[in-house]
Length: 109
Picture 1 (spheres, rainbow, N blue to C red):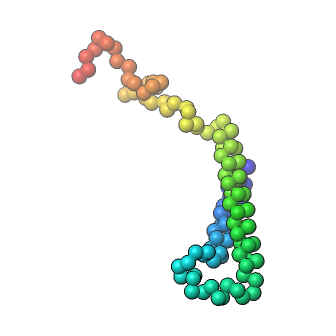
Picture 2 (cartoon, rainbow, N blue to C red):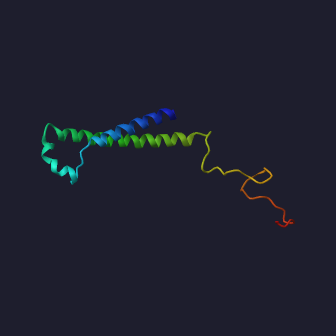
Picture 3 (cartoon, rainbow, N blue to C red):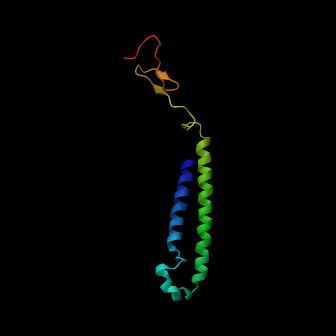
């Protein structure tokens, strides 16, 4: 299921990138000189469609990312950030907190 979610997320990302690149910038800059050309042939309807599809795709991407994170955190086979890291001392024995066990009678060399 995780693989299917990943593939769907990648497809939505690609579509979102294409939709955003197809939009005309709404601010000034270089596009300000071409304002007369925007009145030709239903450009306003195309801009409305592209804006609605941008919001739809970004919302779907957010929801799918949250679902993917929930599926991954529910998986008990992976490691968690809350799990302590098991460290070993020089002899190869595992310790809980990473501290090496030394007896109080021995002085460190």
